[in-house]
Image (cartoon, rainbow, N blue to C red; front, side, top):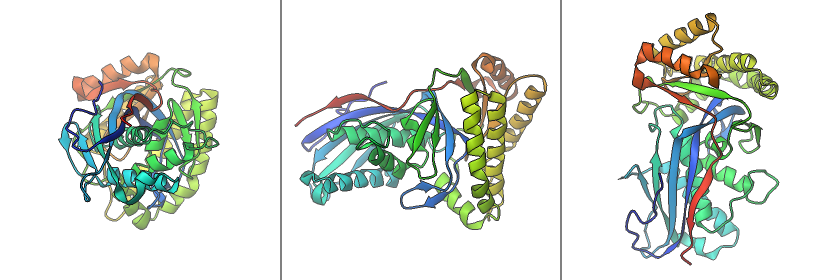
Length: 356
């Protein structure tokens, strides 16, 4: 699909627009908790798999303001809505532009129209915010006429773009790269451990409830940090898991990676369950699926489960086993509730327009 920056009327003069696409990513070694809420810096590092097919396409059009109080506009899947994270990201980008000497960014002289489409259920625990904020940050950056920086931190602009995207979602920066990605706890330093076509992996996605979750990840992280007696131990034990999982990826050892992934998942949910009040994102069907994954493994399938802040279960396996595992899970939870996804590409620009 392709978005047009002319799909809604722009009464002000356009400075330029750009469209970007980004895919969701699923953390195999989990991120949960923030070291700094204002900058959205994570308390721990993470290791993720960027997926194909599911994601976001976003067009950002920057406009010269004709009204002194004109605001940014955000349209998601054809419906205009308010989103504080979108506004915060755009405001920070303009502040950065002003600091870099761009006079047009002073005193709110421009605003943005953001049009986005998600191909993944929003706010249900399927990482829609990761793809959405990665696409938004890259499109907003490019629409100002700035070149897409290398995401290596030694190239000017790369770390600024990463910081910008992280404002919207701590996990979104991982969608700026494809395949298997390691993100350090500084929220900035990323390493692509494996290109999308270098290891024949798959995720079988078992969708338990596509509706939005009652408690956002952001709120849930703070509740866990402030009230869980296990939170400090979660943070202190995390580096070992991250380093061991990195070794497993380098060795292409799926069994080792799967075991570490499940261990990280259950530790994260143990910290959530011990919060006050407890955070119970999992449903009865989630637990049933976990039982089925164990049964599949006992019968010889190389399959391991992971769950995020939502009820859905994702099963990591070799691509060659994905169809068999998906067929089995469909027989348990229904044909329309199981999907197969493969490693996907990095966020990228799909169109630009300069009006001045």
